[in-house]
Amino acid sequence: MGVFQVGRLSRRAFALAALSTLTSASGAAAARERRFEEMRGVWLATVNNRDWPSTPGLSARRQRTELLAHLDGAVRSRLNTVIFQVRPTADALWPSPYEPWSEYLTGTQGKDPGWDPLGTAVAEAHARGLALHAWFNPYRIANHADPTRLVASHPAREHPEWVVPYGGKLYYNPGLPEVRAFVQDAMLDAVRRYPVDAVHFDDYFYPYPVAGQTFDDDAAYDRHGGGFPNRAAWRRDNIDKLVRETAARVRGIRPAARFGISPFGVWRNSDTDPLGSDTRAGVQTYDDMHADTRTWVREGWIDYIVPQLYWNIGFAVADYAELLGWWAETARGSRTKLYLGEALYKAGDPAQPAAWQDPAELSRHLTRARAFPQVRGHVFFAADEVAVDRIGAMARVVADHYQRPAKPPR
Image (cartoon, rainbow, N blue to C red; front, side):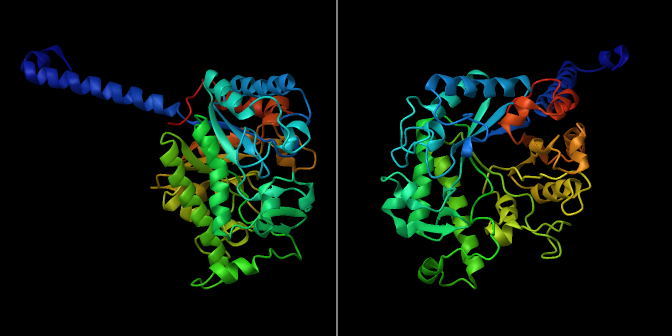
C-alpha cells in the first residue's frame, strides 16, 4: 500500500488494515507451523523379541540400555513417535494386576524383570520430545497351542472356555462379551497408570485365515448371534463393539490420549465390493479379520488409522499408489487422521521384489503422499530396521523429507 493511499485512510481504517495484514501473516505462520506437525513414527515390536529386548533374560540394566538406544535412534532419524508393543500375547510389560509379565523379558512368563519397561519408556520418550503410543494386541494369547505352557495363574487357564486354538496358536474368543470386557480392562490398566499419548491396536482381530482350519466359535455364535443375518455380520459387530467401547473408555480415563489402529492395508478388493480398492489381495480385512476398517474411519470411531501399505509402487496385486489414493479418499471429510504404514523392513531384503533393493523406494512413497492433504504422516516398521538401515532407505527418507524436526500431531 502506497504512502498516498495511507494518508487518505482514517485512523480506524488504517488500524483495521494493519490488523488484517498481521492476521494474514499470523495465519501464514500458523500454516507453516502446522506443516511441521506430522506423524513420523516407528513401531517397536516385542513379540518374539522382534526388536526389543534383543533376547529374553537380559539384565534389567541391559534391557533399559537397549530400550533407550531405540528411543535415541528415533530422535536421530527425526522421528517423533514410538509405538511400543506392551501387550504382545495376553501378557504385560508393566506390573499388571490382570495378566502376567511377558516371557519376552525374562524368558519365563510371569517372572518380574525387576523394573518397569512401560513406565520407563513413557518417561524417557517424553524427555526426548517423543510421543509414546502403547501398542496392544487384543485377542492373541500365545504363538503356540499348548495352554499348559502358560503360567498357572494366566486368565486363559482360569477360563479355558474363553480360548480358541487356531492355526497352531491360542486366541481369546472375540464373540464372548466377558472376553471383550476383560481384554479392555487389561489394556486400559496401562492407560490409567501412565500418561501414554495413545492406545494403539495392530492388524489382529479375528485371526488371519489358515487354509483348511476353522475358527471354532460355534457355541458363542449360538448364544450371542441371534438377530444377525450370518456369522460374518455377527463377527464384524463383535469387533465394532471392541473398537467403539475402547475409544469411549480411553476418552473417559485419559481425555488427552488418542486411539488408533493399524490394519492390513486392503479393506476389500473392488471385484468383491465396488467401494473397494483396485487390488487383488488374498486377504481383505472386512471379510477375513471381520474388521470393517472403512466404517471406523468414515464414522470417526477412531482418532487415527495407519493402514499397512507394505507394497511397492507398481506392485500388481496391491499397488502402493492405488492404495494411497483409496485411503486418502476414504479419510476425506472424516475426523479420523490418516497416517501410512511403511515397510522399511523390506528395504534391502533380497527375498523382496527388485523395487525394494532401491534405497529411494520409500522416499518415493512419501513424495507421492504429499500430494494428498488427508495423509498426515507415516509410521515405519520397524525399530531394528531404523537402527540397521541395510541399504540406506531410512537415511534417504530423512534426507529427502525430514530435514527439520516435526512435532507429533496434536
